[in-house]
Image 1 (spheres, rainbow, N blue to C red):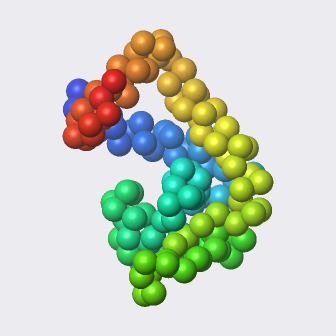
Image 2 (tube, rainbow, N blue to C red):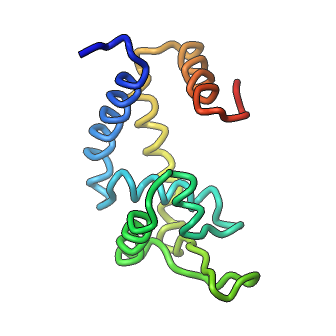
Length: 142
């Protein structure tokens, strides 16, 4: 396998993150996908999140987004709220139970990030983030 290719290394890093995450998130009964959606919902709770927002943000299909949200709803972590601007659209919001877990769930992300990047110096970590943002065409390049 050619380990001098960015695409291969990025995929391997993502798989490593998933492996680390699954072990930690199992304690909370969450999958990596559910965890990522919860993080996004926490960030956007005041604005409201629609299924289409999840699809775009994570580049996932409609059925995948619906499945993740349905499973989170069964766990009592999300609920639907009417969109006051569009009667045909609903917002997904964290429930009170989910909001009680917010600090803990966000802390997990910090721990996982630290574990994944533990071999990098602080400067190297910031540089990696900057390069990944640049590669993805994101404007917030450090």
